[in-house]
Amino acid sequence: MAQQDRLSATDARILGVLQRDGRRPYADLGADVGMSGPSAHERVKKLEARGVIAGYTAVIDPAAVGYGVLGYSWVTQAPGTAATDLTDDFAAIPEIEECHHISGEADYLIKIRARDTRDFERVLRLVQATRHVFTTQTDIVLSSGFERRPIPLAGETAGAASA
Image (cartoon, one colour):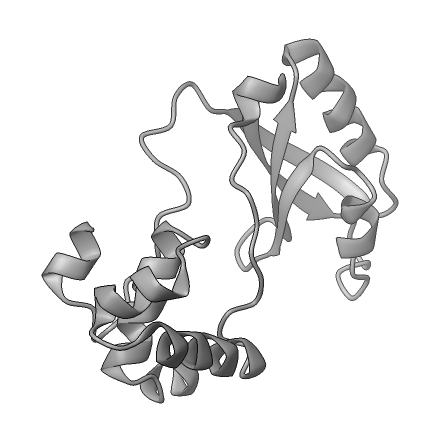
C-alpha cells in the first residue's frame, strides 16, 4: 500500500489510461491527463524506473489461438512438504497461466488454459505427477463475465476511468 500512497493524482490518471491502452502515444496520453507529451513521457519513465509499471504486453484472446478451455485447480501438497516451493515446477508447464501460493486448505491455486477437455486432462495429469502434489480439486470455467480489469487507482477521475 505504501507504493500506491506515493502516487500523485496525475500518476494515477496516467496509469489508468495505460492500463486500458498501453500503446497510447505520449502526446495523446499527455492530453488525456492535462500535460504535454514530453512531460507524460518523463512521468511514464519514472513510473517504470520505480517498478510501478512492470512491463507491457499484448492481450491475446486465448480462444482465438486455440485455447478454449479454462480451469482452476486447487493443489494440496503432500503432508510434510509444505516448506517446498512448487512454483518452478508449475512454471515448467506452459499451459499454467497463473500460479498463486495461497492460505486455506489448498497450498496453490493455478489457472490452466487448454485446447480442449482432453488437453486439459493431459495438463492436469502433469500437475498431479508433480513432486509433492498430494491432491487437486479442479473447476472448469463455463463462461467468463470479465477478466484482466484495470486496477482502480486513487486519483483517477470518473471521466478517465470511462475513457
